[in-house]
Image 1 (cartoon, rainbow, N blue to C red):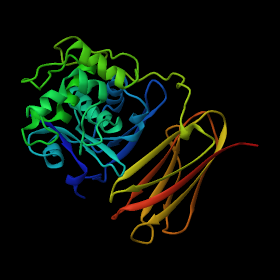
Image 2 (image 1 turned 30 degrees about the vertical axis):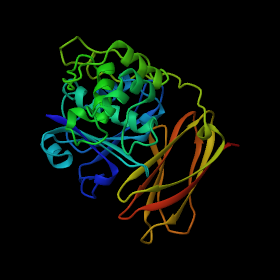
Image 3 (image 1 turned 90 degrees about the vertical axis):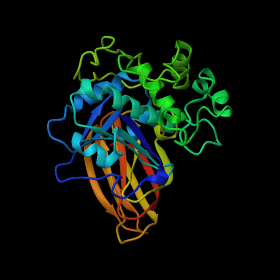
Image 4 (image 1 turned 180 degrees about the vertical axis):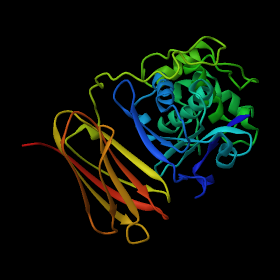
Length: 341
C-alpha cells in the first residue's frame, strides 16, 4: 500500500473536486484560530479527530489553503489509484486537495500527515529548476539530496519507483517528524535523523507547537478525537493583514481557490470579484465566510464586478472562496476591511 501525489498535469475533471449529494463542508479552527476546511462525503466522520491530527502537525497559514476531502474507504482506489491509501492534488494555478478515507482518526494518521507533508512541500518554494515537489531547503541539505540526485539514486519523477521520489521522501520525513509512531516507508534510505527533522522544523519557521505523538508503535494519536483548543491567533502579517489588498490569479476547471485573511477588530468586509477570462455566462462561484460561517454566496458574471459584503465581522478570520465551473477562470479580487459605524 502506498500514498499518491497527483501533479497538475495529471489532474482530470473526474479526479478533481468530485462531489456527491451527501457532501457537506465543515470548518474546524486549529489552535491558532486558522480554519481547516473539510469536504465530508462519507457518513460518521470524526471531523474533529481529523482536525486534531493536523493541528498537532507542524504547519502555518498554508493549512487554510487546502481542502481535506473525506470519502468512503472503498472509493479511494477509484479517486487516488490502485494500491493508494490517500492522495494529494495540486496545481500551480491555485487549488490544493487532500483525499483520505473515512476511518477512525487513529487509523488515518499516517496517510493524512503524509499527504499534508506534500502540501507543505508545495507551499514552501525550494529549487527553481524542479518541475514538481522537491522538499524544503534545509531538509534538502540535511538529507544529502543533491548527492543522491547526482548519483541517480533519487529522482523528481516516479521513474525510479515510489520510494525513490524526492517528493515522497520528504512527505515521509515530514510524517516521521509529526507522527513518529507510524512506520517510515522509505526503507532503502531509512528514517530521518534528528538533524533532518530539525531542518524541517527550521524550514517551517517553527510553525505550530511541537507535535504530541501517541505511544510508540501504537498507531494511535494521543488523545484520539481531541478537538483543537482555541487560542488567540498570532499577530497577522503580510499583505492580507492590511485593511485593503488586491489579488489576481487563475483557477483550473472545477477547482477551488481559498483566500484567507485576518480581521483584527470589528469590521465591515467588502469583497469585489471580477472574472477577467472564462467561458460561460457565470463561470465562477464566490463565497465569503467569516469565523467559520458562510455570510454570502454569489455567481460571478464574466466582465461584471460582483460585490460580497459581511457586516460587523468580529475579530477572527474570513475566507473568500472561489470555485471555477467547467472551464478555467482568470480572476481579480479586491478586499476592503473598514470600520463599522
